[in-house]
Image (cartoon, rainbow, N blue to C red; front, side, top):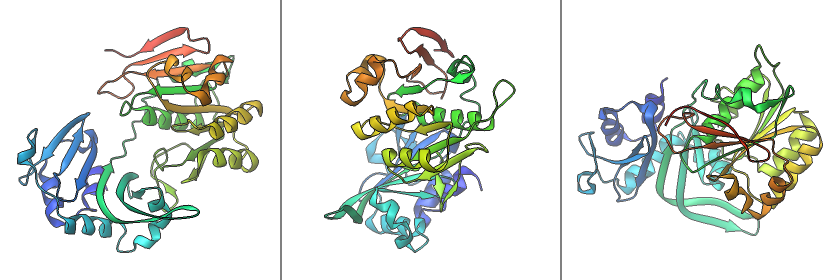
Length: 319
């Protein structure tokens, strides 16, 4: 089943028909947003469009199809195959993963107890983030990540929607599978929000390579400790680090001889130095490589590659 078919099957009849008429390549669609009594929205190549009842795209809010509460409820039922209780653990984190690895973000009323968020109800917003695996997007970067035959601890920086998770995913796949220049390595992925592997019912929907082990929906710091103790990874990959607890786990991994590849929001090394939990690791040059993604339409098009001292080694791609 293709990307478009995977996504359309979760919507009720009217919205499914409307989206089916939209004449865009779903490989370029990033998000589809539904809000109760709000406009049907589509994000394509970082541009927001209103979807009309005829299945055309408009830049005018008055043209948009209005989503009803009933349609939002039916969408949830389709996603859960009428068994939403099966997704209870994922819903605690505010999202579901559907076939194809697409992640559906939810907003509504949270039900909490002394242990934290227990569930969600009265869902008022749904954001379908389409999974796009771009094989080979890490090709220009991968050779620069090795120094004296070993993978460098690497931090990937970018603003939102610039492709850092897509790049991380392809790096994991290639490092895991190996190639002519370097043998494959055991890679552990802590996928707290199911965005890297995009597991559906425990099965990764994205190809992360033959030597990759995934901890799905697991808090990053806890997952890092678990992988080190149980799976003997040579490389650990995590997305969107930031907390002090996560930094402590990363430092422990680095001292164990395991390599780290992580992502974080930011536009420069200076941005990272301003984050209290990361500043010391940067100052002490724990990371041997920084990959800085520039805003662009093409994933992997412009990436600045820097060494641990912040010296620019090269920039891949065009403008």
